[in-house]
Image 1 (cartoon, rainbow, N blue to C red):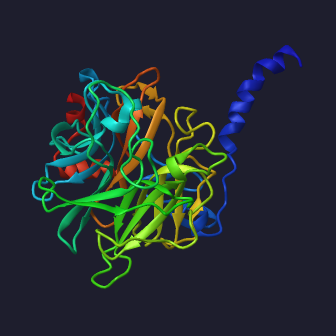
Image 2: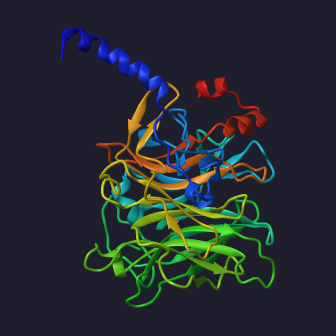
Image 3: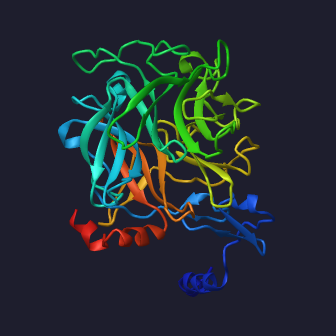
Length: 411
């Protein structure tokens, strides 16, 4: 190739690129759009908050550097959270979060984790301040939903009361059948009319039985259907199951996802027929129903190049037209990865980013506005809770609260 051609070739290719659009995946049904949009003229039109050819990726935006709950400078770790808008005070946002005090980092979540409530008056992004302990150690995996039928908030979690060691160390203990290694197994419930006073109901969902694929049950995520009195499915409970003690796979069995339903938050919960919803290994399901009546989950993927610090492939999405299936696991497009971008122009590629939960719009559209994750930076023992905005609709929500972008810059 002559020197003159080599000189002009980059410019020619750049000019051609303006006129050549990359090939897009075509669709033939809304299912091809991950049920996060509609298929129109063989192209997916994504709902607000979603992007990619198949609408399978959350439209995550840069976040404020100190959003969420980061207590790293005090030696306290947190992990994941659910945000609840104050029922009486609309300037108040509550966070229910796993907290590990006393300098015990993420590796010591069992047995040191407890559930705490934090508050923010600066919007859903926070920052949040810890206010009180809700459930003492050992307690983990908090998620909260509101049942209008009962007029109560329902807090689902795992755990049981423990006498903690005097220093950060591991210990073998059980909270119920299915696990005698670290307290994993069995989902408990507490209810409250005001998010401050709680009635504890004990374990409401337990092991699938000896030898079952879900002998250990953990990672609750509830969604209220409001089926009404007499309904058999007024509340759904997604969970992660695995064999006894969640022994590594193989030979024992993988960590898989399923759903149970009940006519009341307190149970009795009936498992969906057919066992796991899909064969792919995941944990930390977050369940919801969209404005069209379709069902979705965000998941922490345990695939190679993801899992627990193995790479960026940590966020997956699954969807179904009916909660009892069949479910489609979105293996083509990552819902989110390990990198978070900040409004100051910096970014962090986290070692771990897990436990996704979403705060939705309150207008009935079920538009995702914010995602919370438990995160751990590379080379750090501690962890904290990160909140990122999604799409552009969050700006309208913050404007309705009197929060400006300039105010976030001051935080």
